[in-house]
Length: 259
View 1: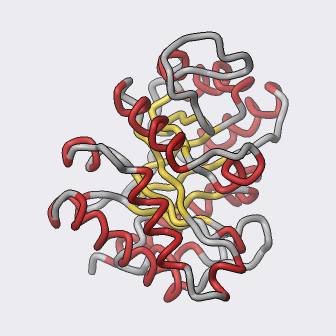
View 2: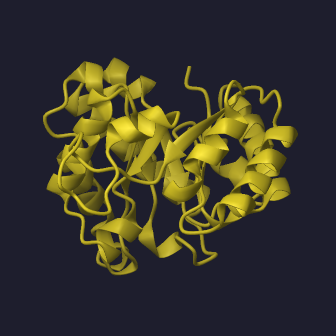
């Protein structure tokens, strides 16, 4: 049975002071989250401060990306051991904004996934198609290519430790989310690919999140789909009351999908 997971991706928002206020409010509102796991991913500059606030509590710390090497002459980068030292447990990898803005390739993302696992971090591998790819009927081709490349070279034991996130690019930050049916269809396809790459048992254990304009109004319906195991939340995670509501509704939706 897969426990729903909700991850808040704060992206490039917030000073350290603002991040502490946001994290503190989320911590107070989710002192004992039931039936759901929660992760927040602040900017690098706020990881230490937020990590201190959340230490020992149920809300886990995540980072928005990492380098694929443990150390070296890589100006401006941050290595997996550095994130572990700050208390990070999760790291987002392959987010469409980094694929597009930074030019990250599938091969590079795969190296990051393997590096994260090697240092005890849970990689959250993001996949998703653009609006043009969906119009051309290439949704499954695109996400399959990204998934196969992202998990390339992983053993079944490593694959089961990863989290997947389906984020249709056309839904990120647009206010237009995929319908529950659209999302569930892609999630089911991804789970079938994991079964092919690893095993059916591992595919049933791996959590697959939905991301893309997730908000309190739609998250419960999305997570009620049996194949959707939670949400990767962008802009809506910057508002503490709204994010808390999303988490609680995701827990209810996840419970409904198991009834």
